[in-house]
Length: 185
Image 1 (cartoon, helix red, strand yellow):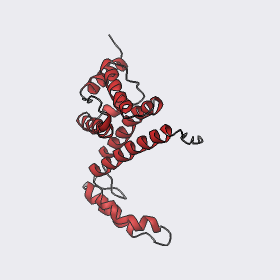
Image 2 (cartoon, rainbow, N blue to C red; image 1 turned 120 degrees about the vertical axis):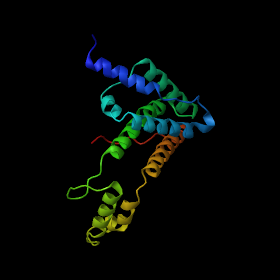
Image 3 (cartoon, rainbow, N blue to C red; image 1 turned 90 degrees about the vertical axis):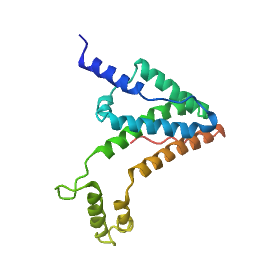
Image 4 (cartoon, one colour; image 1 turned 180 degrees about the vertical axis):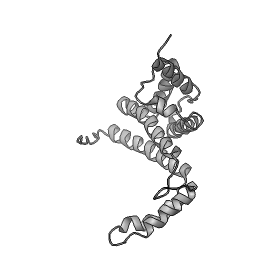
C-alpha cells in the first residue's frame, strides 16, 4: 500500500487535471494567463484544502506536467524569455494560492466576537478612520476604502499587475537591458 504522501500527490494531480489551459495565442497571452489564474482560483474554491495539500509539493504527475507545459507555452508565446517564463509559471500558483488562502479566512472583528465579513470591514474602516491623523495620515486617508473591498476586483488587479510586470520585464530584456538584481535580505 502507498504512503499518505503518495495518495496526496495523486489527489493533487487529479485536481490539477480539472483545469483547462488554452492553446497559446501570442496576441492574447496576457489574457490567457489571467484566464488560467481565474480557473485556478475557481478550482481552489471547489477544493478548499488543495492549497494546504500543495504546500511543499513539487507536482510531477501526468496532469501537472501537461498543465506546466501548456502554461509555459502561453508565456513563451507571449515573448517571455525562458527564465522569465519559468519564473512566471512558478509565481502564478503562488499568487493565486496566497490570494485564495487570504480570502477564505473568516474575518474576525477587532477585539473578537462574531460579525458578517462586510460588518467586520466597516468596523475596521471606522477604527482606522478614528486614529490620530497626525500620527497615521496615510491610514486615515484610506480608511474609507477598507469597507469597500471587492475581492473579485482585487484579484483582477493582482492579475493585471502580474502580467504587466512580466511584459515589462520581458520588454526590458528584449531591449538589451538587464533586470536589476535585488540584494537578498
